[in-house]
Structure formats: structure tokens, C-alpha cells
Image 1 (cartoon, rainbow, N blue to C red):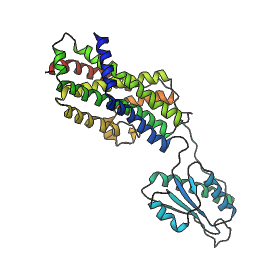
Image 2 (image 1 turned 30 degrees about the horizontal axis):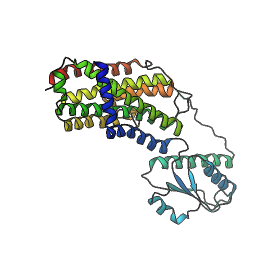
Image 3 (image 1 turned 90 degrees about the horizontal axis):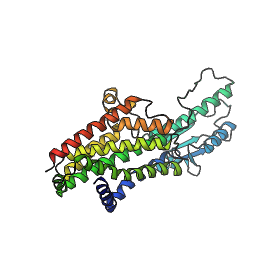
Amino acid sequence: MFWKLFATDVKMLFRNKQALFWSFMFPVLFTFIFGFFFGKNTSVGTIALVNDSDTQIAQSLDETISKSDLFKVNKDIAEGDIKSEIKKSKISAGIIIPENFGSLDPTSPKEVKIIYDPGNAQANSVITGFVRTYLTQASFQVQGVKQVFSVTEEKTSDKALSYFDFVLAGILGLSLMNSSIIGIAVGMSKYREDKILKRITTTPLPSWIFITSEITSRLIINLLQIGITLSIGYFIFDANIYGNMFVILAVAITGAILFQLLGFVIASLSKTTDAAQGMATAITIPMMFLAGVFFPIDTLPKWLYSAVQYLPLAPLLRIIRNVMLEAGSPFDNPTNVIIVLSWIAVCLIFSIFKFRLSDE
């Protein structure tokens, strides 16, 4: 009985071409968007560089900026056109090295001008920090002063990681959450509207077999989502994946099961497809921004962090990132595992009993 139902569910999933398309297109779009911005060979944007000085310091700064992987340099933009080009979003900023800058003449200019859009915080901090660091070192050399104070860096991990690596794990969890919750919630509500659930209750089929069959069949879609997302990140944008792929897969599938069960909870509480769609959106959208998909949740206010750390997606992402980026074990932090398994248990029990009692 289970396998016949499973086979039927798989056929129905793959016959729904539009839903199938968006199940895969959602993670693909997000991966490509963040990959282009933060993946390999990315920069903070194009900057205009106007160098009117021929001193050694000015030429050295010019060469250092031009060779940096942080920027794409355009030297063909006149100083008077920089602001208009920034407003047109054609460049991120402009660096102007004035005439005679770097000369030991006391009357020579001592400042490099940086023109930028205050709304582009990321580019501004990188560009100004880069130029300030270079000029500080140049000042020490000119004055013959040795640097007294410095910073010693000690990393918690010796692995090379980027923001794209961080967000790729988030996209993986996000795609599983959206497709599973919305797919189950809307799909089961449609079954109810079409009186399919009513027919099932007149058969000897137990609710748990029906739920298990639906979850198992949709795991095929989840497996394809995981494979596509990680493949694009790894092969196209050089994402760093240090963990064991089978462990990553096991953790991701566990998350998919959790979100599918949560979809059953929503379907149990929704009497129409529209209601299920609205409830699913109301749950997934806040989690997308508050569970740590795009940024660490410990940057949130303490009162908010104390609540959102228990959202279903938050502990799952912590486990995925630990396994995927640190090559750790899912059980390195047992609290995360307990939270995920608790959500699974609660949703499973609720779904079994509510589905059985609420079907018309």
C-alpha cells in the first residue's frame, strides 16, 4: 500500500511542471545572484582612479590599487565626471591623487580625495580602509618611524571561508524550507478542497502511512535541490565545502523532513488553499530574515536573538554550516540537534492526530 501511494505521489509531483520548475528555479536564482556578488573573483565594484602626481608614492599607490582584486579600476574617467558616474551607478567611487602628492615639499598636497555614494556602505568601507591603510604605512616610511602597535590575528579555523560560503549554506536551508512548507501546505489544502482527503478517510489507510508517503516522495525533489544548489556554488563560484558530503546530505534531508511536517501542520489548520498559502508565507518570510540565512543571528538585539534562535531554520543552519564549512559533526552542539528533533517530534505528532480528526 505504501509503495503504490509513493509511486503515485512521485508521478503527480513530476507532472506538475510549473511547481517543479519553481522548486528548482528558486535556489538556482538565489545561488547565482549571491554567487555573482560574493563568489569567486568578485570585487566591491568599479572605481575611477585619477592620478595627477608623478611622485614615487603616488605611482606606488596607483599600482597597488590597480593590482588589487578588491576593485575594478577605470582610469579613463575625468575628475569632473566622477560624481555623475556614481549617480548613474556606473562606478562605486572615485579616487583622486592630486598633483605633487607624495612630494617632500611642505606646500605639496597631503590628502587623497575619495568620492563615494554614502548609500553604498560596503564599497565605502573597503575603499576608504584600503587607502587609509596604505597611506598610514607610507607616512611611517617617509618619517622613518617604526610601527609600535599592531594587531595579531588568531582565527578559530584555518579554513579559507568567504561570505558566499556562509550564505550558500543559508540558501540551501532556505530552499528546503520554502519548497517543503509551501509545497505540502498548499498541496494538502488542495487535496482537501478536491475532496481527496475525505475519500482517504473512508479507506483503511492510516494517516501516518499517508503522511510518510507524501514526505518520502517529496524528498526526491529535495535531493535534487540540494545537489543543484551545492553544485552551482562549488563548480561555478568556487564555494568552499569542507564537510563530508554524505553528512551534509543527511543533515539537509533531516531539515527537509522537518519543514514538510511543518507544512502538514499548516495544512491541518487551513481550510482553503488561500489560507494555507497565506499562513505558509507568514511563517517562511520571517524565518528567511531572522533565522540566519543571510547574516549571523547573533548580530540581532539580545531580546530578539533569545527568541529566534529556537526557530526551526536557525538550529538547522547552525548544524549545516558547522558540517559544511568546518567539517564538524552534527553533534558538536547537541542543543541544535535537540531543537531540530523536538520540532520534528511535535510536528509529526500534531500532524498525525490533527489530520485524522480534522479531515471532512
